[in-house]
Length: 354
Ligand SMILES: *Cc1c(COP(=O)(O)O)cnc(C)c1O
Image 1 (spheres, rainbow, N blue to C red):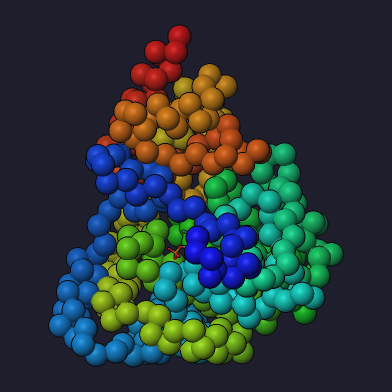
Image 2 (cartoon, rainbow, N blue to C red):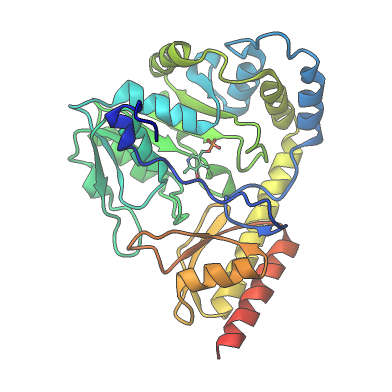
């Protein structure tokens, strides 16, 4: 830290991204990336576009916006694009929270929410999940703040039905409710269908997980056109070129290749259910995940010990140190072969312990 850094930033605790180790090749199940490559159409789009990199991109990404709007069944002025959905979330903190409207989110959820609140000098309130990690909707009905709900939640994978999201929306008509749908494509109903009914609803989505484009950084926000113009105002005040040419072209390719997307989501869901069955047979306890990961613990081995032993054997999962969740590991769902390796490795670790 230099002596020039402002005090506010000295105190900042940055988000800790999952490891991206280079020292050896791991079976990488720690950052919820897709095991499948991006669609060939996405790759081709990005490559062709590379020739035009001397030109700034279209700040409105008109073609991609139109394609995404059509895919989601919304109007183009109900869409804003971001450099990952992280950027859209940050914009939402900037646009819709202040001293009188703290950010409200569960105590166990996406770790970045706290950081977005801190970097923007915003108050926030964490609401404890129930003992079983489910959200008690009643806790959100009397809160006067901007609610952030990941649905399905991370790192638990537990999903809320739309009727619960609607209860939160109805109880907070003068406050924005942000539904972060990073994992929605793995089996949860999207709240996008509700944007015309609730003017306070903002839905965030990403191409990082289900569309195999984590490295391209493409996310989006969906809401009524006034909310979207608020976010666009912030976007134009920070970086109008937030989505680069190659990413926009890749995004279009990914949207056009619908069959590939659907077939990959199906494979992940199948592999998740298969892995859950195997882990259950090994005595693991898991939350009911609707995402591309499982959140699992065993009473035969400590969470951190399992993480370390898996890593020594070349399998990387995500372990969190939080008090309520340190017994658990979050295991990304990869290919069937990767999941077989995970299960075999866990079996041998447990056998050695006996
Ligand atoms: C991965 C993730 C995001 C952000 O992903 P981007 O790569 O920035 O689009 C947002 N919310 C949750 C809950 C996530 O897990």
